[in-house]
Amino acid sequence: MTKIVPIVLAGGRGTRLWPLSRQDYPKPFLQLEADSESLYQSTLKRCQSLAELDSRVVPPVVVANHRHRFLVAQQALELNCKLSALIIEPIERNTAAAFSSAVMWAKEQWGDAQCILLPADHELDDSKQFVLTLLTLVNSLIASSTSVTVGLLGVRASEPSNQFGYMKTQGDHFDNPINQSGTRSVISFIEKPPLERAETLVKEEGWFWNSGVYACSTEHWASILNSIDSHFKALIESAVQNAAQDLEFLRLPVDDYKKVKNISVDYFVMEKVDELSQMNVECRMLELNCEWQDSGTWLNYSHQWPVDDLGNRVHGPVENIESRNNVVYSDEALVVTHGIKNQLIVVTQDCVYVGDKLGLDKTTFKQFAQKEHSQLLHHRRQFRPWGYFEVIATGTHFQVKRLSINAHSRLSLQSHQHRSEHWILVSGVASVIRGDEEFQLNTNESTFIPCGVVHRLSNPSNEILELIEVQTGQIIDEDDIMRFNDDFGR
Image (cartoon, rainbow, N blue to C red):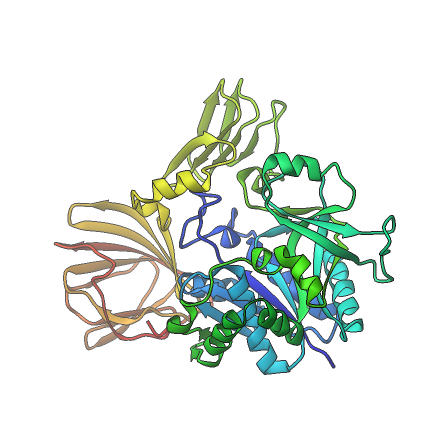
């Protein structure tokens, strides 16, 4: 029985939705509300729906950057979503390398399986329809397994956009009709054309946006890679063969992976559709008949936010006075606008952005990033494998943090050379190691950890543990830590 392997590409640089997204907390993992799902989690749930409908579907393979490995694992755990593998890239090498690495790993596990590339940053209004359409596409590929075929889900282009790839297809008004599965032959592909070209394409028959969802068998993908760039294929195979297991993570080796070409699937494979045809490789597209959003811009990301009578989209405490067609986000502070239009305003705990509704373009962001502000990397709330900490206040020789520790998790056994720590337990029960002592700390109790003393904080309960930590010392630095034992291999 042919296995079906969902491959979720979860990552990003945190640039498109900055300052809400950051390098350490990119778009797929954002949770606007405490109890809301991230886009990554929604993608995992669609994988679970696939498995419920078809017993051939195995748990998803997730590919992520090493910076996000614990965040990826924690958000999957929150859904109780089992993963077949969590493949960790040591450096970013774009979607061609990420998908190909997962395909080669799946080939080792299940032989000639059908693999599905699922980006982790899409929004859908009808996940059930998406899953059914995806299974139809995969089954059509299995039925035509004798010919080398790449399948895609396409979205009918409704407006000009330079954010998507465009596919030219042959349908019932061409010589090559739609086949029984409903798929169309892709005869041309243009990745993110200039807006002027996109305006022309949407007026022509047969053009679709590429949703970024691909399907292909492991054997066929290996054959395609070998035909396009055999050196690329060899490097990927070497990286997968030399990958090292680290806890639940499968780490790709940096020496192999850094040599791999940094390129997307769209440019590496699909823009070569003419060449693929000469290699007897067929590309077939199935139309996706549900509302689909690639949340790559603030306009797309905010499309479901409340809209007032003057066209303002808002999230959080916002008051617009005589302002029109703005996108305004605030996670805490009250934002009041007066008489402005067509602006994006984003207010987080540590940053305020005001500018064009599209946000910073790549060139401008790259120039801005040279300033090396910490707000480019992370929020005040920083995630760790045991939970997260949030910086509340900083000053000369002190820092105040709020720590939230997951159930049955613990920090490393550690010491600090330059600081002491005061812990005040806000909720839950803590197990504490302090030098030679071991004791329990209850809500509203506190303890002191002198500089240089080996210590550990654990949460033995089924509830979240929260405490306030006051750090004091001549040097307050996250790198001031010596670990003696760590559950997470750091």
